[in-house]
Length: 509
Ligand SMILES: Nc1ncnc2c1ncn2[C@@H]1O[C@H](COP(=O)(O)OP(=O)(O)OP(=O)(O)O)[C@@H](O)[C@H]1O
Ligand SMILES: [Mg+2]
Image 1 (spheres, protein in one colour):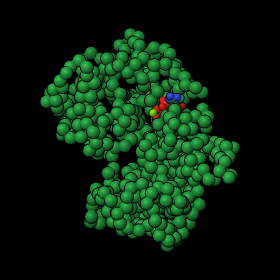
Image 2 (cartoon, rainbow, N blue to C red; image 1 turned 30 degrees about the horizontal axis):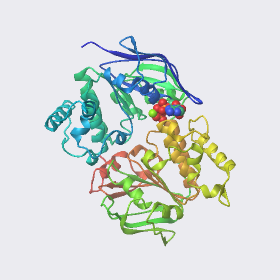
Image 3 (cartoon, rainbow, N blue to C red; image 1 turned 30 degrees about the vertical axis):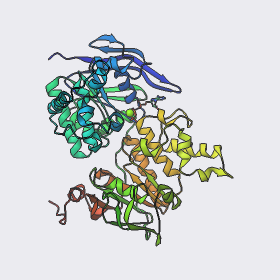
Image 4 (cartoon, rainbow, N blue to C red; image 1 turned 120 degrees about the vertical axis):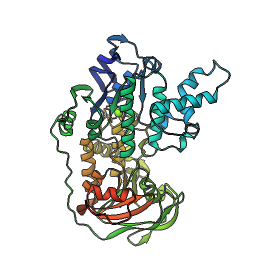
């Protein structure tokens, strides 16, 4: 099969105060999986949007098979078979429609107005056919709202390849997926590349995945391309990180030893109304970081939300310093000095149409008010502090959060609660979509919070994170706690043993 190339020559994009891309020369060809890497705000999504026709104000040229093409609207890119799946998959799907309708969505929309009848039988057959091409087994008549995140991702990929697809751009597709779901996605990508002569452009902050699946990579830094390389068995994540950050970097997060105090937060027999958390009991001592480990879907987020009053509790008690906390809503939780950094940042964590300054102060406005007037100087000081310590890339603290890159929005969510003065901090997958440098900063700040004699709960499906930041860990499976482990004495295998539902005591092999 003839290879097709897609590239840019001298492409630049400027937003007010930000040079998002400067003179980018980039090229990929079909038959490969190619990674685009870089720290948060490096310009990866901006470049992908140019290729997908949704950043019309670029200067320079986009080249398709060496010829200049004008990609000033998404349909122009689609006509050339350039398809993109954005990170927030929920936004692109219609939950109340079936899998078949979602897969065939473009087709349905394009034909609207031309035809009077829709042949639903045909739509279902076509959708089935596409899913078969991907080798995936999903019932096409069920509603998309009932699918897991990974399945939704597959539906979007099916939609993308349902029309001509030569270049499939996946912008951080694995951030919300578990390891097994990620494997499944990789299988689909490899299958497509092998059978359909297309290129997959893959963006991810999980570099070990990149080494596992990609043939080559491009590193971006500050809107420029700094490296293009092939991936060989000798390629290491360390060398890639150093290219991304432009400095040497050791990816280890030494756990600080702090004095751990007495039991402060005590949770007994907690259940959530929909059954996603089932009779959960645990405690956190002052100064302690307690992990909640488990696979995607084990009930970790539901546990965090139930503690915080964002999901309805059906049984159980929550006590702090021996006193029962009556939490029915998140505002009750805030009154009891609890903080939650939620997993789904766009939906729950930040006000995207507000500024960085406002968001970073929102959780603790009281601290910055005098007789109900907000002291702007103080909020600005607070915001500048967190922009600096978390390395939030923004032209000013008055930038709207919507205009920040995905990872930088996540840093704002984390920063917002770090600024609040609370006793209990709950972090639910706080490093999702955040680059390695920023991850180290976030870990440092969480350690500082714990050192201040606070209780920290850290939920994550990444066992390596659990092992590096927590003192003690509970492992969840199917809404229940399967084990309590001393972090210093456990290992990834033991956590996994319980995370997949092991009930017998773990024996190291
Ligand atoms: N619409 C916009 N208005 C203003 N600035 C923008 C806009 N879109 C992107 N930017 C800025 O352009 C730069 C590049 O952002 P981009 O989203 O491409 O980063 P990224 O490499 O995808 O980062 P991440 O890993 O966090 O997703 C950032 O500084 C971002 O704030
Ligand atoms: Mg991005």
